[in-house]
Image (cartoon, rainbow, N blue to C red):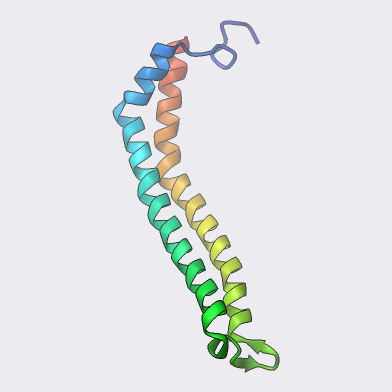
Length: 114
């Protein structure tokens, strides 16, 4: 690759400033925050509920469901399931709503380098 190849050149501060103030970048940040903040709050509430139940609702958490499997164990395992579900939702969201906007921004920055 030559030094004039857009992939090896570094954009100037002006190009970055323009990219960061563009309508696409503002929209990208808005979309990201609209997903991340509510999802993080939801997960933290769910996790806090689990911790509080484990600490203060021993009777409820020790209810046996099947054999030695109790409510506490099921809710604990659901913590892992919810983590994977959130990850899958984020990947799907990013592929559909974030990546196209990010690609437009990247294309514009790379065009400035040519």
